[in-house]
Image (cartoon, rainbow, N blue to C red; front, side):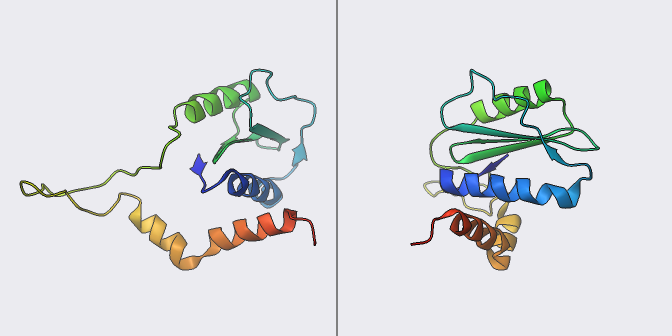
Length: 141
């Protein structure tokens, strides 16, 4: 599961992920035969692929994208629903490893995912790829 700054960024990431599946799996085919569930929340989209190693389901809902690989379709949809429904809709919050604070001050410390955040920020690969994917979908003016 990943969270993005906007729904457009989430959709662009889902498309990038789907487009890269051919490099990861052999026997990749988009499965158009399974319609999205009728009880899917508004703003949700689902892409289903079959591979030699099992199905891949990419579910985008708002700013969130959930990917399941090798679970059967019913199980993948249940997982997506459980995980996406459990997410809040407010600002993203991160867990921190903190030292005890002195009385009257706020505890401080690095976020648990800080190393990964800095790695992606320094490499710029994720943002550039998503921005490029979003730009490729915009009509020429």
